[in-house]
Length: 306
Ligand code: 3PG
Image (cartoon, rainbow, N blue to C red; front, side, top):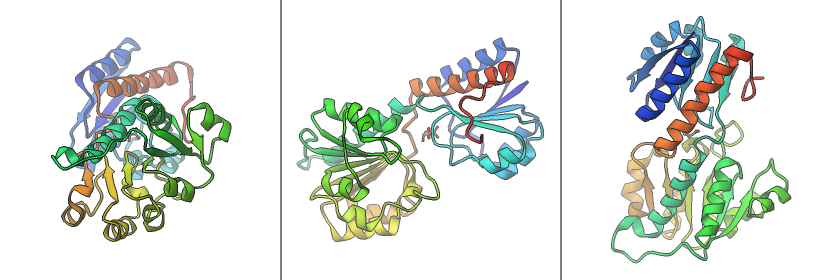
């Protein structure tokens, strides 16, 4: 079988070699499409593929339709808002992700961004320590739990909200459960967002929530830019000179925000939460193993479009 590894943002070389070895050992061939410039490149490359591994690459209806032989696509990572699941289902393509495999990298970045903002983007202005402050975690999944345990080790008080988890599970993960989004934002010096982009969450964090945060609070987004209502966020930042926003996913209005809010806003130049050698290897190799196993045994454990 031909396995296409299509990554606009390439994996570390060690991950690519590991994927090649897993594919080769199982008798499959690896096709590589890295740093491609347009969707057309992906549409062309996929025509010959039986399987595909992607990151945030857009697996649209057009891509799926162009992939006549495709049986499985694995998103090497957690969020799968880049995959048209309905198109996959319609064309009999199994779609999977690799949950948990890159979580530590994202969690470490969330902590780094909190400290970066607290220390005024490493300028000489007087900063603030995170020890003793309260961190609210919005969704206590693989990344959220890791952010919580790291923050606790740094002396923060950790609260969490997760509509899919009972309070006991949140307590067992080391955080204090809160019963509403409003309570989370109102009571936390930092809120770290770990929700997926879905029709329910898109644009769900805006003026009301952000402007309810305590004095000097910081909103940290290592999830998806789409979950933020940017106009509402900007209004809150305009009204409250003490609030900050830091993100791993550049907002649409980044230039305006930087001009208006200076050091109170920071976005990484390119989404880099999962961009560590370890996360690349963990997620990439897991994706390759899932494909090999799927062809060998029919295992669909991580299937998203069941
Ligand atoms: C994920 O959903 O796994 C993360 O956002 C990482 O995405 P990336 O593979 O595009 O860096």
